[in-house]
Length: 422
Image 1 (cartoon, rainbow, N blue to C red):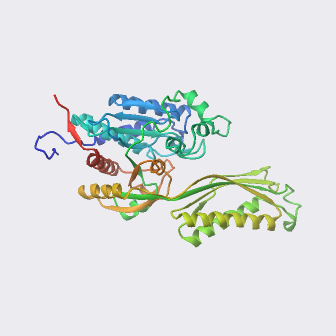
Image 2 (spheres, rainbow, N blue to C red; image 1 turned 60 degrees about the vertical axis):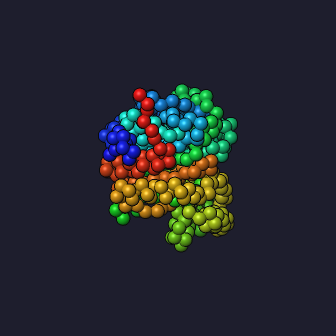
């Protein structure tokens, strides 16, 4: 393709071959024997991945900056350096035993856009930033999306850096250990727009054979930790009606949450972790500790689900003769993305002959944090079978390329470009 002004010079285009190779290469860091990768944030595996990303940024001659939360930014200078930047971003940390695309695809597609400008010999009309945020997944440190939340001022620097993992190591200590405690202050670079390209992580696009998801927002999330204290006793000698079984009480909560989700039709409820004490096959559990993940695209319905859970916990405690306490870990309200940016994504898909659909993200993303300070949008591409957070996560290269192409078109529309003077 050529530019429309008659110069005959090449229009910036995505190099799919390099994008695919970088995705495969990054996926090799933190690999495990079962074919997945475990690259928890601020671990040695994360350090290796960060070093690789920074190396690729510098190969494109980007100005690499790291803030005090370890968020990494590669800046491509624009023609008008006084204007606010456009940021493309996501994350490169993973869950346990993860697939290759979640987060990484968005960051590396940002590099692909920067590469398109470099190889065409042109510069964006204003600065372009490629971002990789710290601890999006929230596996080692809670809350999730900690890096972007801290970046936009949703949590203070002291609070963010003091968060501890299960071993008592703080975010600040972990950053120092891997050499990514940066010098830039929180929010040193606030863009005008933030765009995040991501695999859907759900089944809709793949099932309906739609190429591009135009993401209108992210549903609300509420995380809880519930502790149930009963009484340990012999599994063979204690009659059922005389038990104070923390395990059974936890099972009742699990069934309640499933019924709640089915009844509402919109609320999602998940018990993701659970542990019993003393943990013996022939002993009635004296304690059960588990997490609850509640999600809904409507803030009112999410609040109602929280209230119903609290009511049921009180009821179960009385009926089972146990003590139940709960701790609210995190709550993020539903987010609506910028309508104008969503429209540009839709137009870009149409111009490339790609089918698209409007949708709400079921998963949390850094984009919902960035929406607090700038116009934000997300682009989805299909996940085969809706599989994610799993080594079998897969998106065909043609869909990866299509999403990156739409991203590039939106960026070109928003920032423009000009060729360097000889």
